[in-house]
Amino acid sequence: MAELRLQLSESGADAERLDTLTGYLRQELAELDVGGVTALRAGPPPPGARAIDAIAIGGLVVTLTKSALGLRTVVAAIRGWLSQGDGSKRTVRIELDGDVLELSEVTEKEQGRLIELFVSGHAGSEDG
Image 1 (cartoon, rainbow, N blue to C red):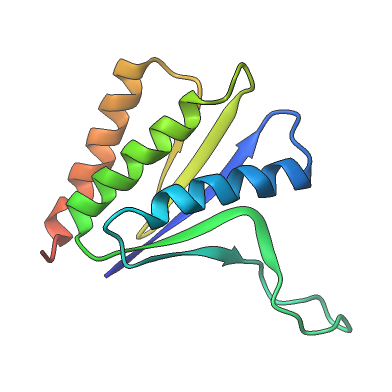
Image 2 (image 1 turned 90 degrees about the horizontal axis):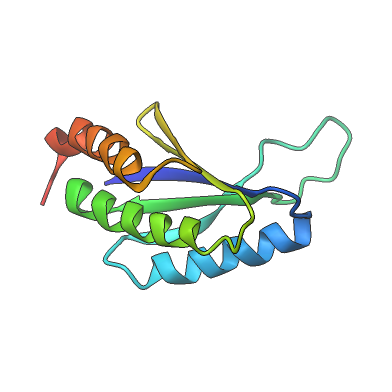
């Protein structure tokens, strides 16, 4: 299994809006054939702070069970989320095994090419 880390952003969005948008994408991803979707945890609390389990606003972790196919499905859902921006610039930073792909306002053709390069680079680790 692989963990795909996502960091979402939208221009002009405050923390509450970003949390809402992240919730929508989380629900959509949870319906896919993935191992799970959880909130991305923030780093350890600063010294002297109470030890609570803080989440990173706009962050998600997707557990992939079928690496290449699962990755393609998740990225397709992310592309759909990006296209629903209603004029607001949305960006998603995708990280897998130390490789990073950032999707935002690029043409659909260019976005497709970048996604194919990213996914094919991880296709060798497919386990099912």
